[in-house]
Amino acid sequence: MRAADLVMLLLIFGIMYFLLIRPQQKKLKEHAAMLEALRRGDQIITQGGIVGKIVRVKAESNEVEVEIAKDVTVRVVKSTIATVMNKTEPAKT
Image (tube, helix red, strand yellow):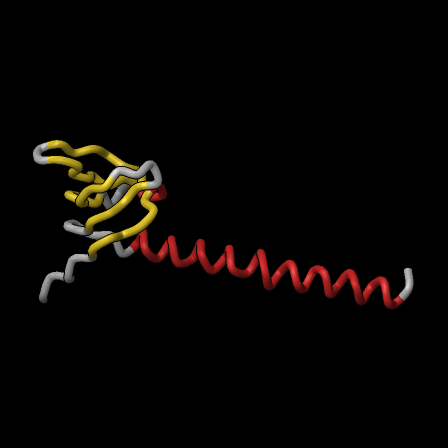
């Protein structure tokens, strides 16, 4: 293998890292931080397109209870939450 071939191979790997791998890792970290910051009252959208308001965050499991209509709550796995539309303000101490 010539030195030029090795340089090209390293260059291709470097481009792949900065264009594909690094942005994906950053997005996963942001999503994990968003999930950790969930609290009661947040308006969310799930990956299935369900819009609702968080009623209870279960600390011991990876689920939250979401109210999708008046007196209608569903349990949702945290990782299926796509976005948080409206954040509630933290309680004053």
